[in-house]
Length: 124
Image (cartoon, rainbow, N blue to C red):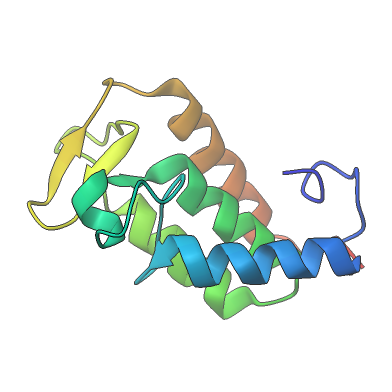
C-alpha cells in the first residue's frame, strides 16, 4: 500500500522486491491471499482475500502493466454474489463467498481500482 498512496516511488527497489515476493508467495491464478497459514496450498487454508486482489491490480497498473492489472481486476470483480456484493474472502474451489457481507472496504477498493484503471499509470 505505501507505493499506492505515494509513500514510496513505484520504481523504488523495495517496492519492486515486495511486489515480486508477494506475487511469488501469496498469489495463485490472479487471486491473492493475506498470508500463508502453513504448508497447505493457499486456497485450502482460507479463501482468496478480495481486498488484496484489488491492491494487486492497482500495483500492476502503477508499474505500467495494464494487461496484468486488468486480469487482476476482472478475476476479483467476478467473485461477487448475485446482487453484486462482495465479502472479505472468496472460496475458489467451491465458488462461494466467505466472511462478512457486504464488505465495504472491498467495494470501496473495487471502485477505486475501476477508476484508476481507466487512467494512465501514475508512479514513475
